[in-house]
Length: 359
Image (cartoon, rainbow, N blue to C red; front, side, top):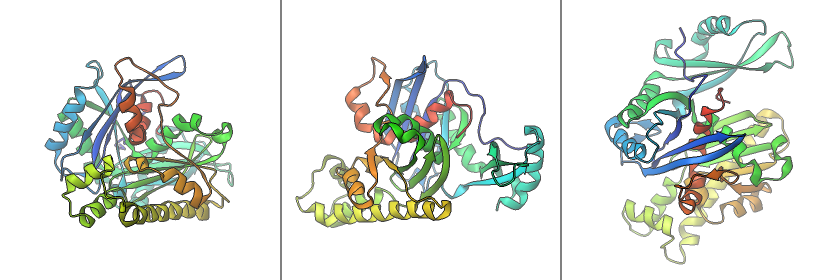
């Protein structure tokens, strides 16, 4: 039997983004076709508890999730989390269009042994039919996703330690793609049918997802993030790590920091985004990306959107997945607005309550 990486039918659950720098959670409800923010939470990650997007200390992360749990309505028991990085493999394969899901599962178990560079007893697999292959109508495109089972089980364990029951373990780039739909109201009216790049700049990892008409066309993880900016502040101004983090957030830095640390970081960030988009264009044959959505902690650095517009010539916005949503009365509007760019992945995971498939 294939160990399912994704659940297909899900109850209402909180989306929990377990990052290297913090843990974010979002709970949404759906009323008459409109989403409402019921709760959200952001808690700092314990130092050393995550390394290269892998959980190193289950008890420490579980303790952080216990704090998150107190901010989520008690009746909500289920959660969706995600994995990313080198432990995740996604491939589009071609199968006979006539096969049922059960037949596909049996066939994929046979095929996976040659497609996945890990022993099959060490991975969790799932698949989804996409569409009929344009070149050969007798075949259907099937998305095969695989992850190291130990990575999946670690997330299940920390959620349990925090008082949640894991219902879905998704892939971060898919959750990011899904959240892009929530930001379309920030873009021109034609964005729903255009090529949109979503770049989530986390502490140690930058995720790139390219979507068009609700379909994920391309994803890429890059080892780059705001941690490099923090460490530049740390070394340049002889601060401790915590002092550098605080200075980055508050802007309490010397006037010349713009040239000494911010500009070099912006240059590196621009190079990463340009390279990721160029790799997509080269592989897809597309001419251009129409719109760019920037999210993650480093997306909050002042002027990032203007820099990308000026240098890439792409209409760019800073993500706010809640811009068209109603908010529960208990929500701190100012805090939600402040953290909105960091809550994209958590929002995409929360959408799994209402969207059965992972894409």
